Image 1 (spheres, one colour):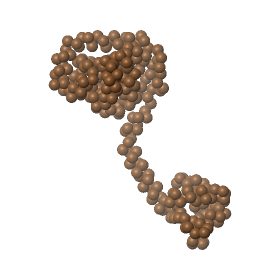
Image 2: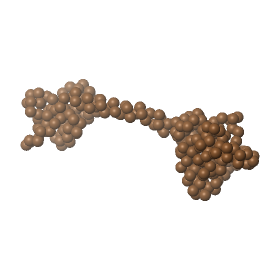
Image 3: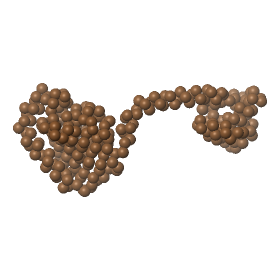
Image 4: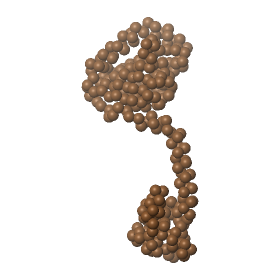
Length: 275
């Protein structure tokens, strides 16, 4: 029995015992034409008799032999070409599925900054929109008092398209506040969010794609959104999360001032954006 043939069959997904048994069947069937009984296959292939029945059944499941229900059972090999055609079809289907899911899988399994960390004085760097959005949802889910989001124009649209975390916070009695550019492009999204959050307008042209989130004055995240489009999980976003008390307090102070300053314009701008 040629080691080269055994190795070739193993490359196609067979175990060594399966390869030996299949080659033995080819040899025996060529001589006897009616297949072979398990004992004969074990003898020629040198597969242990304690393993030969499991091995032959495995070959049958893979479509490499037929079992003839006689006494004793006889095994007839099927052409390798049929097995190769089946494998080709299977691999073609898997390739099609992989191509269809490529972008989503690539985004889902990008490095996300390591393990989540808790406790004061901790920092976590997150990369990819999937990782950043997952952390945003987790932060909102932990909220008990207040959520303040200084959002980008595109974030308003994305949050309205996937509002589960904000809805949950609002249902729990959390005050959800959103500062964001209110434009023609996100008017419908602002209208939808106004049902669960208080929106106030802000000018953010100086820092396009930059956002910040504060939850309960206990944790914060600075975000750089790349690009600021409508895709919910594909993007090269970067997020810096922290629960360091001094950092959180500083970020909150920077956001509370524009929130208060926007109060005078809020009624007019939000009414316009949601009309």
